[in-house]
Image (cartoon, rainbow, N blue to C red):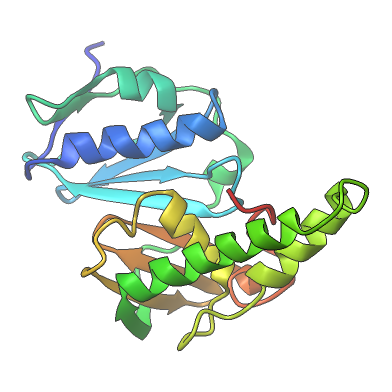
Length: 224
């Protein structure tokens, strides 16, 4: 059986996919992604190892394709062809548990809009505060419990003007979704899901994880 080859409709999409996969693999060499294609759009879903969130990258396809497969992120990266703006889909792998529960496709409503610069500066400021406070600790005080508690206190703060926590903004920054400071950022909600969306991708959390403590998908507390 011939491996599916997907051709992107817009220039730069193959490079964006390669960058996204490269960031995932920094945190987890054996990372997997779930691919869904339909109606001329490809969705790439991942759960970065250092961040317990769902990350989503979307791209328009030159030709419509129907696909739903979980594959190795590393093998997919090897098959990205930037000059031809295409990617060949590798064989499927046994999917991790998170791949069986994806956010809804419809019903998202905008609850807030703000500039990427503000979100990026908020995330960077929180990371800088964590590092500064860590450096002030003595070696004896710098325990994992102390660092985790400090990070949790910082990332539980709300992002100004929204009900979402700073931890979600940090994930978007680390994944490269905030690289254009002039680009708009929108916060969407659908049921008990929250989605921070930029032109470069989305970070999605479920339940209280995005707006406070509780069950669902949250982030690991230690900043990177």
